[in-house]
Structure formats: structure tokens, C-alpha cells
Image (cartoon, rainbow, N blue to C red; front, side, top):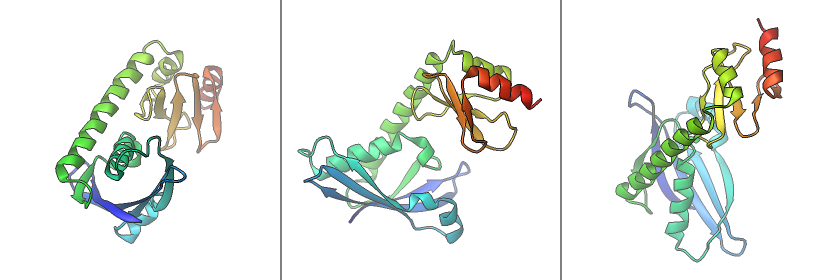
Length: 193
């Protein structure tokens, strides 16, 4: 695999939390991009983020573009999913992209995320499920993964979130192994009083 970038993730205080290197390979026959994200940080942080040290395979819609453009499109798309990162990644080193190109991809992702958040708020303006989460003071907010994805505090009052889909009007909590519609949320919340 070819190394294409090393970047850092910084916390809200501007302190580097972790460093990662991304490598890739392209199988042109199968139209598959193979990427590997490896932590190059301390053992304690690696154990927390161990799911990041794995190989991912993605379909390439257009293999007629350059290798650099394939990686650029993939990486920009990855940056559009803020839950995959601790803050926005900070450029460290790349043999494929300049710092300016990296920052441009990051800026495109920031704009995409902001637009997604605005659309999510507009889409959920009259949503009964979001209104109920607000009524219960569970702090619903866009998750930024899609215009229909929201998160809120869990009714169990434990320190984890609950996922909400405003398109299907369903919610789910993987930790509590509960899911349902607006009526099942009411029943669960009332049982917790």
C-alpha cells in the first residue's frame, strides 16, 4: 500500500491528541479503492480508537480519473463525516497533497457539514419526534452524518447518546438495546420517571 497522508487530530484546546497515516491501493479490475488508517500514537489512545486501525474497501465510480483525483474525492467524502474524527484533521505530511490542497478538501467538508446541519434543522422543524425529545429535555441535535440523522441524550440518563432518524421517525439506543417510534419513546420515558 502507498502512504498518502499523515495527519493529526487536535482537541478543543489545540493539543494534538493523535496522529494517523492513511495508505491506499487501487484494484482497477474490480474498481475498488483499498485504504488503511493506522494510528501512530501512544498505546493508551490506540486502545480507545482501535477500530480505526483497519482496512476499508470502497467502490470507485469513475476509474478514468487520475489516482490523485480518486484519493482526493474519497478523502473529501471521508472528511464530510465528522464523527470519524476528533475535531478537524490537521495536515502534517503528504507525498500526494500539498497543505493547501488538504486545507481546501477540509474546507469543502466543513461547508458540506454546515449545509447538512442547516438542512437537518429545517427538515425537523415540525417533526413530532424531535419535539418530544425537546419536551423531555433530552437535547436533540443534528448528528451531521445526514440531513435526517439526529442524536439526543438517552432517556436512561446514562452517559451515552441515542440516535434519531427524522425521515422514518424512529429512534434507537444501541447501549440500552431499545428502539422504536414516538409511542415507544413515550412509554420508555414514562417508565423511567
